Image (cartoon, rainbow, N blue to C red; front, side):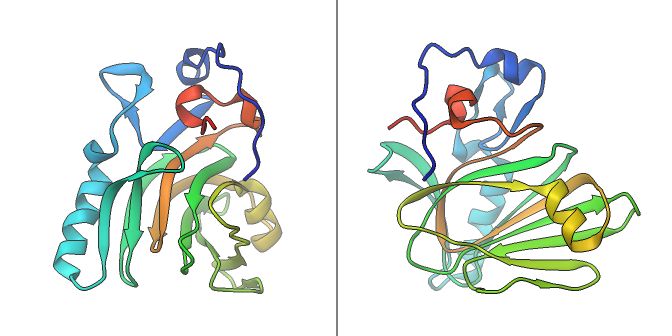
Length: 203
């Protein structure tokens, strides 16, 4: 995981207040503008938990305590498990912290481009080569051991794959198996040390 020393005196409220960083998972706490809500309260997680119970078998969505981070995280297990998060975000970068569970993991991003067409970006460790068609690009994910810090330059991917400009991200679909700590958008490529403390992993 890419890691830089974090300044514990860093003030996070300015970034949140000016909406330069938008937390998606967990989302903002509506009762505390400077903090994040609990994982359990996230509507998309609650729906995914209900769906996994209906699917049964090895499909599971639950909140677990990760001993490496000493934090509660979201765990997705099973071949049919997924969490779907609707959004409408214009920011260029999507960032996520995920833990490799030695299994396949897929992250789908649905975007709207300048031609008013919907495109799907699929990032997965189940592929070794990239593939592009008119509305879909599949990209391999180099998923190392343990917790990893990933960022996706949405503008660059959309331009390289389709020759158009990214306008907005409209949906995120995360498919098992993995553990997730944070998912958020940011308007510029902040360094790890510039992240609000609530969005960073403190080693």
